[in-house]
Amino acid sequence: MRNGPSWFNVTSVALGLAFLYLPIILLVIYSFNDSRLVTVWGGFSTRWYGELLNNQQLLDAAWVTLRVAFLSASIATLLGTLAALVLVRSGRFLGRTLFSGMVYAPLVMPEVILGLSLLLLFVAVDQARGFWTVIIAHTTFAMCYVAVVVQSRLTGFDVSLEEAAQDLGCPPLRTFFSVTLPIILPGVVAGWMLAFTLSLDDLVVASFTTGPGATTLPMKIYSQVRLGVTPEINAISTILVGLVAVVVIAVSLMTKRQEVRRQQDIRLAEAQQA
Amino acid sequence: MTAGDSASGAPFGSTAREAATDGPDIERTVRPRVRRGLGGWLLIAVPYLWLLTFFLAPFFIVFKISLSEVAVAIPPYLPTFDLAAGWDAFVSGITALSIDNYLWLTEDSLYWKSYVSSIVIAATSTLIALIVGYPMAYGMARAPKAWRPTLLMLVILPFWTSFLIRVYAWIGILKTEGLLNQFLLWLGLIDTPLTILNTNVAVYIGIVYSYLPFLVLPLYATLEKLDESLLEAASDLGSPPWRSFWTITVPLSLPGVIAGCFLVFIPAVGEFVIPDLLGGSDTLMIGKTLWTEFFNNRDWPVSSAVAVLLLLILVVPIVLFQNQQQRATEKGR
Image 1 (spheres, chains in turn brown, cyan):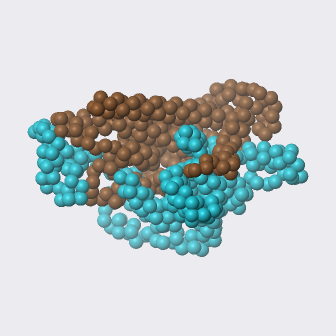
Image 2: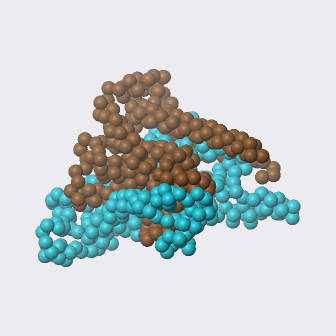
Image 3: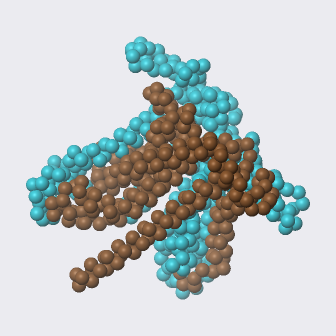
């Protein structure tokens, strides 16, 4: 726009970002607070991080959560990528409307309903609840997020590349792995990460679908938070926030570099043609 | 295209495409590219079956149990259907189903009050989020081009961090001896600490905070695509900036506003974590009521009936949202 950002634009963006970040920053700062009273500053200390290491229950929950997140994100990425391919490539088929409805609906479905309905399914088929039922539940909603992310990557995809490979005698499966997948890979990676963090984060669906021995970290955090704010929770929150921030920033920088290299390749190829 | 096609060797693109259109697929007139072999059907079948089993089928079970009766048993409802018990047992099971739970929901004011209050809280929060988010998205769209990816990243990043933790962070800020009150007392703006935590105000703050990126992102996408020459033309014709804003920018950004508002409103209606952690005992929201009914009262049939009604309330906005999304995707293709 012609006259650039006004002071009003700058202030509103700055205030908006401050609103988004201030609570997290305060949480991180107070995790280094020596005082047990969480809102009174008692000097810098890392003692709460040390105490986390002695909290076996919390560590167990963290381990369960990481395994659930890893497995459900991986299955969800597989299924979600397939679903995205179906949505973009499979044209019309019987029940297509139902299918796309089922892909989009979990994105907006209240978690309490997702959790309750899956629990009742597991009860109805007499399936003992625990580790694997949480994985199934997380896979189900996460695959829809993956599908949407991969779909947006697929829609901007030049089909003639695949057609060229197939015309040169490349079998469909190999075409997928050597042509399609490398191009949609940033979307697939982003989808996996989204699925991973969604699973890492989920309290409601996990609470409904879990069973004895499979308490996840959010459930553990939730039960402690209900009793009040504690420095240990601040510390573990800081670790989680830091972990996610580092991974997200690293991956986005990586995909950006890849994109730049791809653009260079394209320019190089065009220059050679001319 | 199937493996058979390429094995028989179609040397040129045109041949391969002609072969594809010769297929018996009736749909080919619509999208001629698609001809499915076994692999193509498998591709559809795997995610389709997964969603049918773990997304759609559970809803029918919820519906069935909402018509059942609570019982002191495992599972805690009656009747249960056992296929081995034969047809007669099935029929008597069917006749035992009743709409009593739904009648109960209309009799006890707790439930309809929860529904109404959920919608009011979600709508209020959506409106506040729009007031906060619109200037933000607008400012981002007007920022220098080089900054935009960074700003976008900054808005998305909080969304990646744990929802539970972000809601939890507000407890320390909003409570009576919390950081906000300390700050306001220090400024001298107030003499006695404000009670914000465990009120509806805290719930509004929590929802706006948690769902703001959902509103800013689609809004930013439409605002960024806005054709600047329209604004220039308006200003050349003597339109003051505020008038150009109301007559050009706002109407053209409407799709983004609508998508963003749906993305805040729909999940907010069924929210559980925010009203539970930030709201008070008098904060009624249907997600919380369902949770209490299920975990504390162990009344599975009534919580199923609550879920069915919540779904019915949300069907209208969800369908509207999906239609809008579908149209946007078709346009983008």
